[in-house]
Length: 414
Ligand SMILES: NC(=O)C1=CN([C@@H]2O[C@H](COP(=O)(O)OP(=O)(O)OC[C@H]3O[C@@H](n4cnc5c(N)ncnc54)[C@H](O)[C@@H]3O)[C@@H](O)[C@H]2O)C=CC1
Ligand SMILES: O=C(O)CCC(=O)C(=O)O
Image (cartoon, rainbow, N blue to C red; front, side):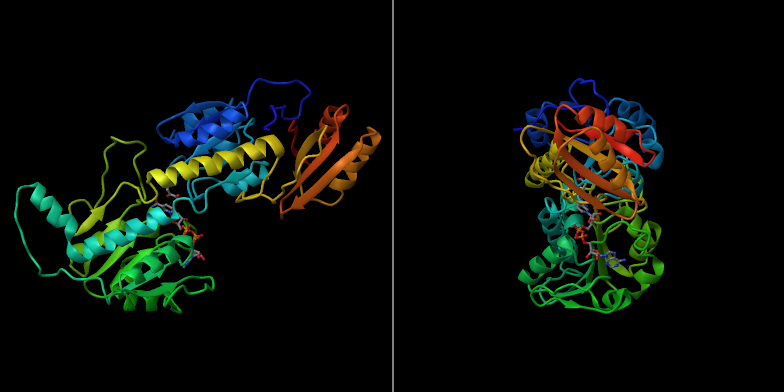
C-alpha cells in the first residue's frame, strides 16, 4: 500500500503532493501517482525557465523528457521540489550536481527506449545506403527516378559505434544480423558482443568505418567530438548517424562534408537547438541536403518505450516520495529500506561533514525516541539518512534535525 503524504519538515499535514509532468509524458505514469494520491498536472510542451520557475513554486515532483532545462537558477527557487524524474535516458538537461546539493534526487529510465533507438539506427543505415529518403521524397513529388548508382547493400560493410553502452551494444547486435562488421570505440573497457571489435581511438574507428553512429552521453568531452577534423578522417562516401545529443556534432561541418560530397549521407535525430513543441518551425543547415535523413528527436519515441518509461519513472518517483527510496537515482546515495510497521519514517539529507550522525543520534536520544531501523549512505557532498522512529516523537525529532546547521532537507514520509 502506498501511504498518504506527510509534510516536508513540519508537523502540519498538507494537501496532496503535486506532480507536474511536462512534454507529453505517457499516461502510463498516472497509475503510480494516482495510487499514492498525488495530484497530477500535465503540459504538452517544455516550459521555458521563467514559466518553469513560476510553476515549481507549488510543485513537489517534476517529470520532464529531454527538452525541459532544469538549471541551477531554476532549482534555486524550487523550495518545495522533492524530486525530478527524467522520463528518458539522458539527464544532461538537469543540473544534477545542483540537485544533489539541494537534496533533490533525479531519476531516469536507463533502458526503456534503448531498443527503439537501436532499431531506428539500423533502419537508417539501410535507408542511407540505398538513398531511400531521397527516393521516397522524389516519388512523393511525382518524379520517377529509378537509380542504382551510389546505392549499396549493407552486408559486409563496417559499422563504427562511438559509445558502446546500452544503445551501442544493441545497435551492434542488430548490425551483425544484417551481415555487417562492427567496430566500436568507448572510453571504458567494454565486453564485445558477438564479433564486434574494439578499436584504440576515435580516429581509428572513423578511418575504418563505412557508417559511424554516435551513442555517447552529452558531456564536456563529447561536446563537438565530431567536427571538420574528425569528418575529414572518415572514408569518402561514408555516412554519419547521430541519435545521441545535438551538441556532439558540429552541424556546419557536417553540412559542409555533405555538400562537398566527402560524406555520402547522414541521419540526424538530435540538434543543438530543438523546437519546444510540435508544430514549431525548425531551422537547420542540414535541411534539403541530399541523402540526409532528419528526424525530430524520435529515437525513443515508440508506444512500447514511452509506456514503459512512464511506468518505470513514476514508480521510482513514488517510491521516493512515499518511502524515501533512492535506488536508481543518478545523483544520489542509494538507499532502499523496508519500513518497520507502526513507525514514522524520517528522511534527512545533510552536508557530508564529520559529526552529523552524532548530532542526529543525540537528538533522537534527547527525545527518548526508539530507532527501529536506520540507514545512512553518503557521497562526496551529502549524506542521506533514513530512520524509522516511534510515531509520537517523529515530528519533534524531524524539526530538531531540520534546525541543525548541516541540514539540507528533512521530512517525514508517512
Ligand atoms: N535520440 C533519442 O531519442 C535518444 C537519445 N539517447 C542518447 O543516447 C545516449 C546514450 O545512451 P545509452 O547507450 O543508454 O548510454 P550508456 O551510458 O549506456 O552508454 C554510453 C556509452 O558512451 C561511453 N562514452 C562516454 N563518453 C565517451 C567518449 N568521450 N568517447 C567514447 N565513449 C564514451 C560510455 O562509456 C558508455 O559506454 C544517452 O546519453 C542519450 O543522450 C538516448 C535515448 C533516446
Ligand atoms: O523522447 C524523449 O523524451 C527523449 C529521448 C532521449 O533523448 C533520451 O531518452 O535520452
